[in-house]
Length: 105
Image (tube, rainbow, N blue to C red; front, top):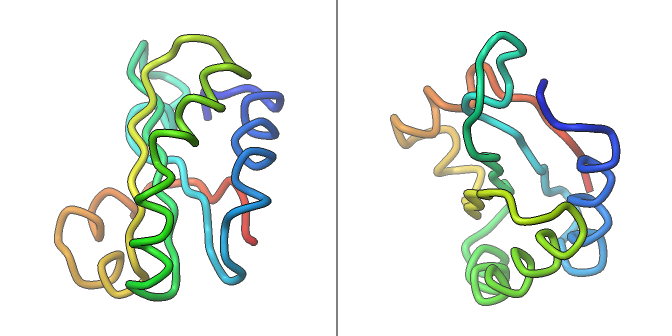
């Protein structure tokens, strides 16, 4: 996994006050592969229901700004999806197969 312990802690610290219980912050994509080079930081927050998803999507930009203030100007791709989407949408099923859970809330 190619993010530092500090970056991981910063991602969690920013989300902690706003994320609902039973959510998971997951790293997927090239940063999961220790042998790969470069790449943006692909994060997905998996929440239990559509209402939680909609609430967090409204805060997406503010979360990105806070993360960049902590870790510097890195490309961060951040999505919020429901558990149903994670299990049923082909893109997410495939992307999450080799993903790493950074935090469970």
